[in-house]
Amino acid sequence: METIAADVNDKKELSGWAMYDWANSAFSTTVGTVFLGPYLASLAAEAATQWPDAMARLAGIPIAPDSFLPYCVSLSVGLQVLFLPILGAIADYSHLRKSLMRVFATLGAVATIALFFVIGNLWWLGGILYIVANLAFGAAMVFYNAYLPDIASEDRRDKVSSWGWAMGYLGGGSLLLLNLIFYQFREALGVSTGLAVRINLASAGVWWLGFSLITWSRLRSRRARRGLPAGSGYLKIGFGQLRETLRDLRHFPETLKFLLAYFLYNDGIQTVIAVAATFAAAPVLRGGLGIDTGTLTIVILMIQFMAFFGALLWGFLAGKMGAKQSVVLSLAIWAGVVIYAYGGLYGESRVMQFFILGACIALVMGGSQAISRSLFARFIPQGKEAEYYSFYEISERGTSWIGPLLFGLMNQVFGSLRPAILSLIFFFVAGLLLLPFVNVRKAQEDVRKYDQARCKG
Image (tube, rainbow, N blue to C red; front, side):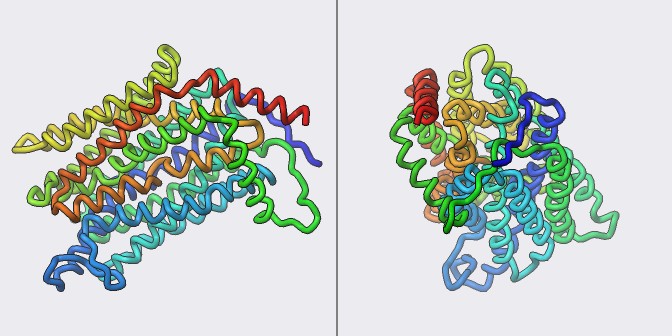
């Protein structure tokens, strides 16, 4: 059995790990948050003009143009529910997490680059490519997150996790800045609006793949590689490991409570991020803000760079008031954001109000997620990091499904984005009700006893 030794808190490896957040955040910002939603909605709306109900048709099914991307987000996460736990189990058994992370990151980046070819009546292809890219994004994030307990000591995980999120916002914001400059000067360059959007979408895939090479060069394999038992394959082992993990979850009631709380409140966070561009760009008559793409990109860009400092701030707050308490505070702010998005943002000052609302989002967006990630690392038995983070990732960035589905249905039923936005308050209230009951100290003690029992066995 080959053992791969590596120290924790190695600065070069930590920087390489954080660089992956820099790389893949281009997909979250340029594709998921800014350009793809409005672009696909406009293509679907054009296709819908041939129908009296103003609905686009996919395999004969009527779809509201503004609801198409939220439905795709929901479907991609449904697929993640099926695949990610199996991949996590395989990675923990074989310790192929670096190789699998590379495979899925490459697949997601290539699918993102292929968005360049989505035009006209191929609006449905944009949905398929997004589903593939988002599924691959989530799979790669399982292995990325699972590295955190291995590369950082417990006393540094909050700061390291916050630094990774901060690098993500800085990287995503940097590409978005370049995309904004290109988009603003597209006419001077002789580039049509549609072509400019497609180039920006493809650039996210190039950025994702290119900067990931730094991660692959610095991130090292961990622990022992175990040989497969005779007559077994990785898929069989993966299912076996998953059954064992699900059976053992009964030993970790606090971990289960945290996962439920996280699933709910992070679903709300991810839905707000995923639908923000659609809500902002949609006409006022449909409950949106009617903000043009250029202005919207500036707002999102401002959020990205402010979120860099917000993530670092929340890492500091976690050290002062405790990780769980800092997340609870962030959820209260998120609830206020959703209420104001529903009841405010009217009149001529709505653009300025959107800037202010974006600043509030920036302060809590990275912090609530970064501290949740490092907090969860305390609840994981040794050797099962990828498996547990696969459950965690099911509701991670841009991969939630209940929120986008609820948002899409509410918009389609009421014909307005305002009730759809308000419906998201459920997720933050649920998180605020459940999270305070998670006993962090008991969760850590449960893990310690479990690990000791396994060693004796």
